[in-house]
Image (cartoon, rainbow, N blue to C red; front, side, top):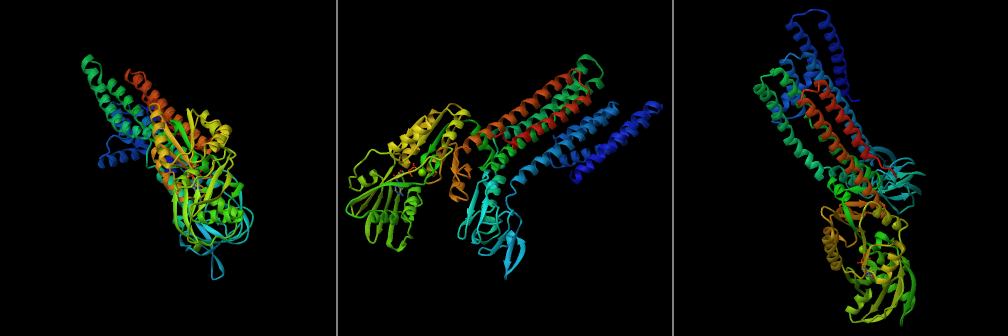
Length: 619
Ligand code: ADP
Ligand code: MG
């Protein structure tokens, strides 16, 4: 418990004890009315003073209708009609509820920030050969830092000395040990598992992967889900309405029926107390906060609670193939060189692809193996969905698919085979082709199955690749629709046609690897990108980032989104339901004020505890 919480508990305990003493005193002794009033007033102020002063302070700031105001009015009015013990009861119960609420909220905030505590505050930096502990903000780029086993990597860096394994669980949710050796880049937030390494810092603390992730999660709370906005708006109108209703209830029936005013004022007070919307105002945002926290714990960054809500209503999921469903790591299975050697063919391909970061380009460079002399390459032009055109040693080299070479006047022969054919032409003459294949990600089939289980009506795939490759993926995954040979513009058009197929209030998801996907991501309600660890472009473009590149994480995200929505709806229905019942009972004179406060406090506590469930996920 924090200090203010302890103080509140102390006030409650003293208040409760003196309340019991006051009851006993006034019961056994026949005291005059004014002394009884004084005794109860004194007891009332022990727990009540803070409520009165808070209400006064809020009114001074123009916020009239809050819970403190309601409780102050209710208890003062109870004094006015001579129900002294009830006045004390109202404040006592209310404060017990406040205490519970503060503890629960504090606890869940701590739980979420603990799991987001990716970055240590300090690093061990080498200053003139002597290790010194400094704040991470003070470590300059290029400095050498030591990380011992068991410690978190404090900053983005490359390994300078030593070998070790890293645990990426904090970032991705999966404890996949990755081994690194000198020259390898490491991300802040990973845990060093096996041995001490010396690192050279590559980015300042504010730009590190962990800092970016944390900033994202923290700002995610600012773009609010519709449900949250509804609750805020609701509270703004609801409380004044109930206050007006209470005033009418206190005045009109006694005027009409001639019954005692005190009776009806009492009912109006009960009515007022129940009207407190705090159960909703606190628990609904808390559930969304928990949902976002739970997603980040699983390696999924959600950029706003509105996306979590939209994801819960997803109906159609469109996916990219390369790098999303497949690994994006191509292997050469066949080579046909015409007029040049196979080594020369691969050399041309690798040189031409030297500036591209398309998965095909990366794979060809890797297959070539040797270092690439960039000075031999000039005038690089990449056509998305087609290929690249460059000058190698002054000769025009084209590397890409059949459509690309046809457009340039060559006529490559089309063979029917599974795999992606990469054609190479030099100075307008075909010099051969490379047949490359990609493998499905191990969890691709699982990803599609999960999506169906979470109520996705249509799982479609778009690819710029050949029809035969697309069919092979379809055979393995049993998708609902497959579109091959798509150019970036076709992808946008297809997304628009899928949007037309959506049912009312349902949403469209696009999941890609973040490579030339920006126009398509913009067409979707929720754009999901495979983040890779620290891939800035993907993190910037998407609404949801999957840090470990596993497509099945989309299912996990949907599970979390649905659970979060279910919890917040449960809270809304439960809180409003109980309130409605007690309101009616109160208006009919069947509910005691104590019962009303108890119902209000109880509902808040239960709703908050329920909201805290959103932080956890069943595997
Ligand atoms: P996907 O939809 O599978 O992500 P892209 O739209 O990125 O594919 O590319 C479609 C096709 O265009 C690829 O299958 C490949 O044949 C060709 N292509 C695109 N970029 C390149 C490149 N840099 N080198 C060779 N071929 C390329
Ligand atoms: Mg792609």
